[in-house]
Image: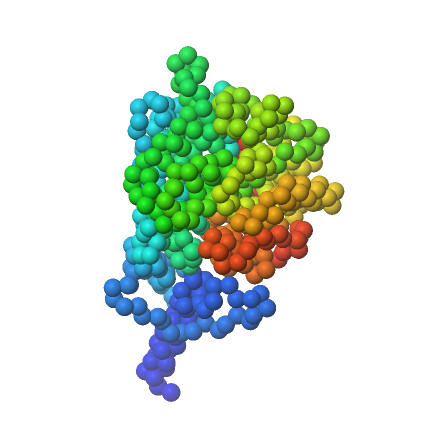
Length: 464
């Protein structure tokens, strides 16, 4: 074989290798990869070397990813373009912050105006609306609220001007199959009491504490109604963590402001906080909620509360949900990582730090600690049992160690997402919302589910 023929053969081999690598990259990003969720027993398909050519009008500018790889006789370029599948319509992942200015009556903790991000819908989703209430714990005292005022959770002055929309807010059909092209709103959380504080006057004699969460909710709803929400054909209120609790609190309010919308439903993600004893025997979370309720006068928001109940008891979803008449979906892990740290083993309950490793990584829990976690799971299932009987309600209770799954791309709908009966959370929620089937998915005990996406924390969650 001549030198020239050997060089030609080497160039052909190099082109084939680059094509194979591009195909493998596409298979990990959801382009031309066959079914998004093949059964676990299915053998992986071999990568194809053919590239999909889209019509010119639908082509996107490829996004480059660093790939310092060498493959065969051909050295790959330092950056290889990766073509990603895109839904029709423009891609707008980082909507700009919009501040709602209505004088000093509707403000965050520090007196700055509340804010939200808006992502317009497109195609057949342009008449549907999905609202998401941001989470971020609560503040129980003037000291903790003062710290909060200096962050995005207490002041719109500290909020990023743009927000990344992922998970249930994504406009990528492969990541969010049922709601990708809807109008979406992310309502920022800055009042410290799940949009329910109701103190009329500024607190602390002009030093700048405002507890106006209820007014923020009402003002933002009024503005969105004027921008097209009032004409929605379908509307979906969602929230995560403290925003999930807000969803329980405001679900019927949401239904009430949309009398002409045929379908109105709600989803609370990671928001079913439990009124249980911690590992030291205290009801720490009830005391915490008592402080929040008294500080922000939230008891006015809960007509369901009886006179013999502590104000903090009225704040728990198990009590709030009893009066909800709008269809609701409960998305919650049975081993919620935030609750394991702040409800089950909060500060002061573990003086010897025996739970330090278990709090951040469930695989490091001892057998006795796992028994406690199984008891916590049972308490959750007992608390939601009465809502399981409601035909128009849905639930997805997986056995994962995580918090807020709808706002994580990997946990909401991806090859890494947890499944119950071979359905991701996104698929279960979509089936329920569109009445494709009744959805009451309750997972088995940890560690039975091999599909769980369990988080491992570098450091504990901050309380506020």
